[in-house]
Image (cartoon, rainbow, N blue to C red; front, side, top):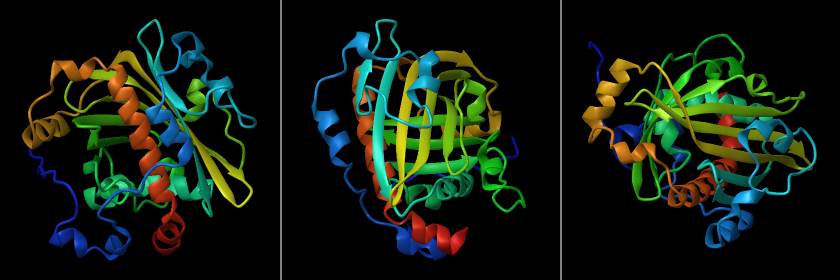
Length: 273
């Protein structure tokens, strides 16, 4: 299809270590903060306690907290739910808008975030050098990623949306990253993610939510799909039916990557934004 495909692999190779930002790469991902760590080893949330996706604007309101800030579970309708809260001293919402507009154009950048699990990243349209606001570089764009969630490789297409499209309010000094999560191979949407970043004393806090097994269809990027198949086995139909084990693994993954990146994001932002 005229597209040059690249391989996926774990960690950094010589060409990655030659990147100027390689000094921020660590061989392994930091552990999650205590709230996530406790929730991962605890029981799943009762099905009746889990809010529906339709109430996300209330769940992620600009102030206050929700009854569930940590945990994973599955509703009686099959929808998986993951909630995590990460404290991020020295961070700002602007840093996270910049990160989501900057990291997906190169796999080596993406690997800074979760060096144990992130193996490949590409953008539908590379807007990283465009003279536009950072938020505009990822909203309306699609990130194609290969990452391990627990033991299983996931090949995902994350279509970033305007948070207002699902009813969220984003005051000045805040940001909320919203994505429709789908397969990078099959024309199937799998669910939604949302990461609310809001200021607190000394930095920000991120409130993350995932609602999975909310199906939809999208037009696949045929070039990216062909490359994804080339990087590994074609899509396993079982990957499209997400279970409680994945929810627990995703809670841990989210808690690890958000805590890990937040520790050096201020320096990365200062140097490269």
